[in-house]
Image: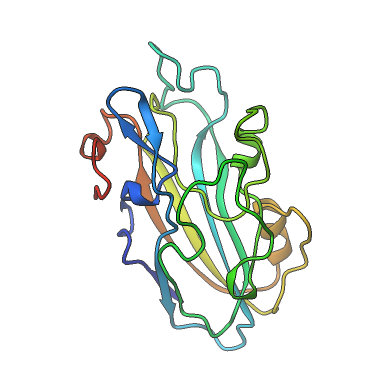
Length: 218
């Protein structure tokens, strides 16, 4: 199975159109357009009864002490953990494309609704749910896609890995406010094929100078 995108190339910079936050010269970060990227795929294996698409960032700091703190940086040597940005399941086996903006075309304070999604698919909560849990203005259940917003003082360029799975079941056995780990566990033994695309993104001007003031950096 082969996954491709018109929105960004594998292992290249993601335009900030697909991000939750973008670089601002005055305040470090401002909200971005938060469109979900476009994807298409082919060479689907026989017996596919549904697809799942997961996006995660494996480069999130394991400790928040230095995150977005003036006069400090998040060292590249700091151990990193996963952060899920999109958990999309039960996609129709005849589907071959996800259009740009079809699942997300802006930021919704307190999160988009779910788990029901367009075309009878389902979406789990992403990790902005826990990130904003203590924020009175932003706390809520963040279903579906919410794009990159890495620390603006992080020395490490973050990777955003989009993985499409072809599955031998029409629906995964997950319920309620399921998350990325729930889906990865439920898929065990049901994966016929998978393929990934990785975009990179940073809000650190030293790592992403071309993103300053741009809504379509590449």
